[in-house]
Image (cartoon, rainbow, N blue to C red):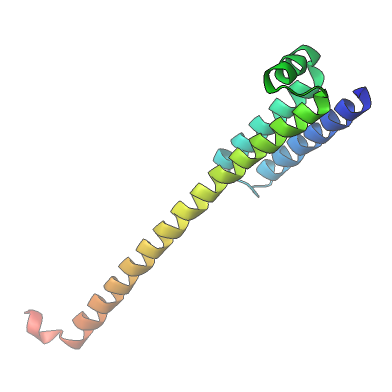
Length: 120
């Protein structure tokens, strides 16, 4: 069991390093990296803090601590993915509204070019 927890700790540290590297290279924005870093830190802490993992096992009614850790990890990552889905949906709505505004402005610009002398 300790080997499994060590592997999980190493993987969560690797995830943290990948997120920080992506942040440094501007591949990911700060506001999106916070939730991923939070998830990786939570998984790392649970894999290293045996007392908290044992209490979590009691709370969830799971007898094998790595199973509880995997359950928490899946839940945390599902929440992060849900948050990202909300952000993408909002960006899509904003993109549609922006495209509509551009279309209206293009239409008005064409109308102004057709009737330049009637404005004065």
